[in-house]
Image 1 (cartoon, protein in one colour):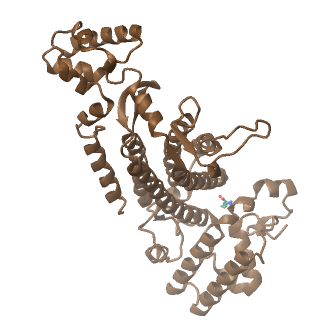
Image 2 (image 1 turned 180 degrees about the vertical axis):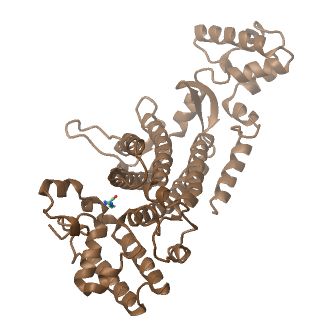
Length: 459
Ligand code: ARG
């Protein structure tokens, strides 16, 4: 066990199990770059404020750079003897440059240091997630454009409802991802606040220039209450919430892709490179990728609930409980990033079976609403038209025919207002073309929506 950064007051060594229990080095080691970046900024500021000497600062900064390179080369392992990444880096620094290294922690506590590191890490993650969402949006838009002519059933209750353009269906997911992206973008300003300078909880007696550190590290603002700053984890919760909603959307899309790839639906074919087989059933080709995305959604939700629960009873200010923020946050970051990376490639690996989609859109009375609209246009109140078309559907069902297969005589039997032009209302393409209200599925509207979506992404 290495010497503790807080050893002075203690007369006994820490119990080995307690040391292991207390330590976070096993997972916070991934914050090494942020920790060093933060320390360098802090050190520069200490020198500028004449709290330490310029030469001392240079020596510390050089040694910190060396430590970073050693970690990256794998020359410095994250020994379990250290409590956390902050203690490890400080210990190695002191090992390297002796007493000068002992000055780095002036006016700072691990309490503000750890929030700084976690904020820097979350800030990077927010940026990467935004980029990956954009990539996924582009994949969706391309898929919609490439299959623009395809018509498919739109569903409610997973029952065929009305014909829609496949592109309209795909654009719906673009809208969800757009909101997700906006949520992450808006969260940025709340993540991007400098907590350093709060010290343990009450601020510090040293004349720190917090604005300088904020500027150096690219923060938009500095925290205004030291007690809040060291104990607040809202930024991590916000990331987890935004990640949860995003995963929910990816999971819904995945669910559809899974259904569409079944033999029962047969709407899509997935390229072999994105499927897996069975160890016993030679014929199987399984959609593991969307299944895993759907599955991983649960663990991201779990992380949100886990951190919310960790936070709910904490008195001000720092409590060790908040060390429990890291594993959920890190895992959510990794999960969301890989899911977005995989789905954006997966979308390029599916092809639509256009004939199956069309066939499905032609069967199941999907134009029944159009027929009711037709009668309404001829002067019948909609509620009445609805009832009559319901009877027509019943009749067609008994005849084992679709509405478009009924003869004009048969149709007229239900209303004398029906004329030859009714057939223009019984075709899925005509149905789609008529839905021209903003947000509707007409090719004209959908084309504009896809163009706007591209514009918004700057492509
Ligand atoms: N490893 C700790 C964490 O992640 C660092 C802060 C420790 N502070 C303390 N007062 N024990 O929260």
